[in-house]
Amino acid sequence: MGEQTETNHDAGAAMDYPEHEKTFNLFLALTKWGTVATAALLIAMAFGFFAGGGLFGGIIVFVLLMIVSRFVL
Image 1 (cartoon, rainbow, N blue to C red):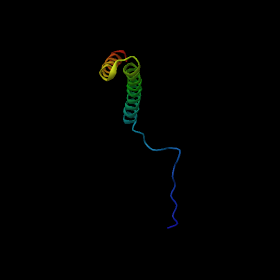
Image 2: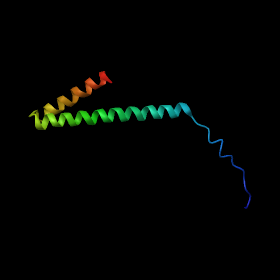
Image 3: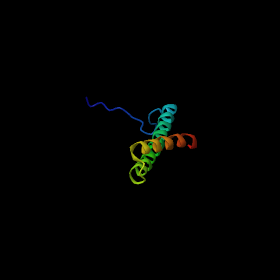
Image 4: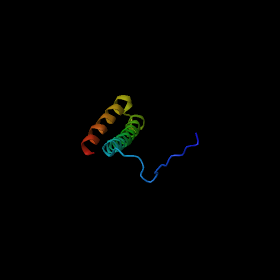
């Protein structure tokens, strides 16, 4: 019950670097496209509400912005 075991904390656990890199790249991609989609949505809402484009005009602007950003980024 009172038996102690030696633990080497300096060595650390073995890392799965390829899996770590895949996860990090997925995080970066989701962050990039989430930011692009949010910006496109705000621009489309501003066009639809303030420029008189209406709902369908805003949807068209959103889709066009996402298509353009796909080719630019």
